[in-house]
Image (cartoon, rainbow, N blue to C red):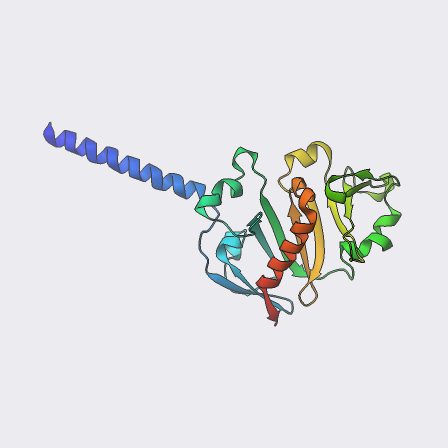
Length: 222
């Protein structure tokens, strides 16, 4: 009987520790805490990115890639860690993650440069005022953008506006990052970043922070 009690005690301890370990593994599923730097080549660009900022496990290796997807927590724009796992797992409807994608530039103009040449011709007049100087424009029905809206912000001293496309209505409430913006960075490389609509209230700070972060990741031409 004594031996049976000891075995039961040991089994209980094993289950307790095993449960904690397994629970931690589930919480980290798909994520990585490692800060090992990966050297990734996209077109004529070399990026140096830590594992914990790379969104998909199969992309966490050195080499040539057509596209690289990252995820970073606002506002420090750092990758996954145990301390911030609730935000990365979107616990309690947390929306603190910015998603970045890098790939070779496919079009000659980014969104800011497309405002006058393209977007201004397919948006309705009479914008709606948004947070922190943002103006929301609806697309004309024939433009084919559904329920999306165009968010435009003008910064003093800048000739080109901040431009992002955002989902609206229920689709925006359900999405983790309903707004999207693309820019040209590095050597003919396109960076697209998707972000929570709430960050439009901080669009100037976010824009500078994302560009600064990108510049630290891009090590130079190939």
